[in-house]
Image (cartoon, rainbow, N blue to C red):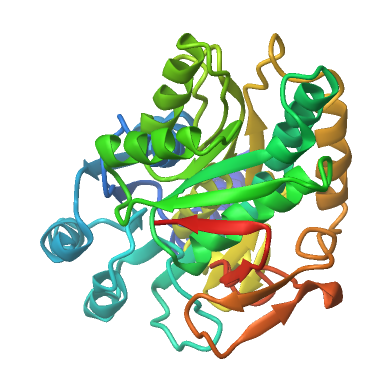
Amino acid sequence: MKRAYIVTALTCLVIMTVSIGCFRILNLTGGKDHLKIGFIYDNDESTPYTYNFSLAKDAVEKKYGEKVEIVTCSNVLDDEMEEPLRELADEGCDIIFFNGYSEKVLELAPEYPGTEFCQASYMDMSNMTVPENYHTFKGEAYQGRYVSGIAAGMKIKQMITEGVICGDQAIVGFVAAFPNSEVISGYTAFLLGVRSVVPQAVMRVCYTHTWSSYALEKDAAETLISEGCVVISQHTDTIGPAVACEEASDKNTQVYFVGWGQSMSEVAPGASLVAARICWEPYVLSAVELVMADKKIESGISGKVHGNDVSAGFDKGWVEMIDLNLPIVAPGTQEAMDVAIEQFRRGNSDFVFKGDYKGGSQSDPSKTIDLRGGYTENENTSYPLFDYILSDVITIVE
């Protein structure tokens, strides 16, 4: 009996020793049980772009609760990035997310090897060597733009059929921030989506030369409305263009609006057709999970991995359509959108930048493109690179 007791005790001791050893091994290789996370925004949550990005922060808080401590800095201009970046890194943030386009993030990342820096893609990273702790990411926006264009095209087709406008009045407007490839790629995809329904449609583009100015954006939209645009979209950060469309409708000039980043149905209930957005949540949630597990971020991200850069579209939930305004969209709009979305989900996107179009590069006048041979966006980088102004169908309004 006594001998059995001793054996049992020894057995328990061995089990405890093995358990403690296993715990120590798991603790060393199983990652962290708590993270400090920083978010730096170029604006605040009152603007569509930052609000949309902040949804990823909310998703992290909801999923991880007390396992994470989140610090947020808002209204940080690109040229003012260094101070808040250093503060968050010095405070011990394990990972920091940015929606601004400052090069300071890339420059300072090597100084803080214990922090992962994840920045919304702002340039072509395909031929760049970056620090191991610097990462870029972006949803393939052109997909959402194209599907948005289908919704706009369906409405324009309805207006033509019902005699509201003539075929030569199929003009769409676009309020654009800057003449860079990200913006040009987006509005071109939007127009090509429209033309997939209304082949004669053309576009007028008005630049504001700033990402965020309610007054300039609204003024640009009003200019486009005065030039006969019947649907307007935007790649800027405020609700100004949506408000301009709603006010035009109140004055018996029916102009419809297609949003970007968030729904505009509250500010433009009589004009807003639909909106598309990049979903930042899939990347941010995965990055947090991987850092918590002490794994390289790109090792577990579901998307197209280009080194330390990742992109994806409808297929991985990185792009989605929101708030289809059923009372005012044309019949069959959802079905038409679904056909294109299903193609994207199956990995087919070659149909977007393709057709009997030619254009010249905005950044290099010596470069031209012929889309009869097609163009593949986001092939090697998450940052959009299409910067050709299509001849005859796109006009830049000065």
